[in-house]
Image 1 (cartoon, rainbow, N blue to C red):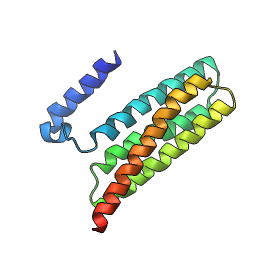
Image 2: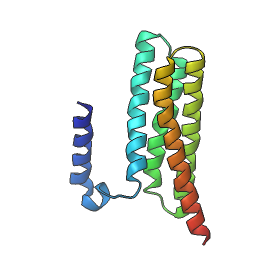
Image 3: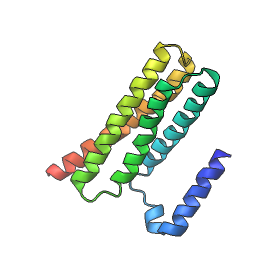
Image 4: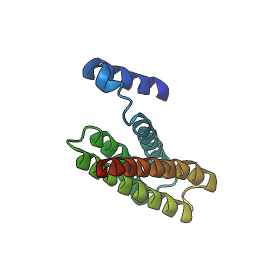
Length: 143
């Protein structure tokens, strides 16, 4: 079901933005991973609200976890290299904040160890990818 919705989103972007923009390889991995992470965060919040009656930390996690991808998307439509790096820097901060909320949810036993490890590993992978892109772009502009 989810893959069908993602396919539909991709098709609409292709139709309305054109092939060059919609299928741009630039940032494809980080865009997809940050979007997938956002979906997981939203579903985790739904679970925590319904099953654990936890609202505060999960709300904070949803704000930071969905902001990562929004800022990544903005970065790739940035006005300049410094704007690009700045927006990715904001994404990196949001990623770090998401890690904090996940750690707190685990430490307070709202999520199990396996639930924590699964989504936390995704957050760390995003952190590594975004950091790598920032460092690469920063080193390229210094030359």
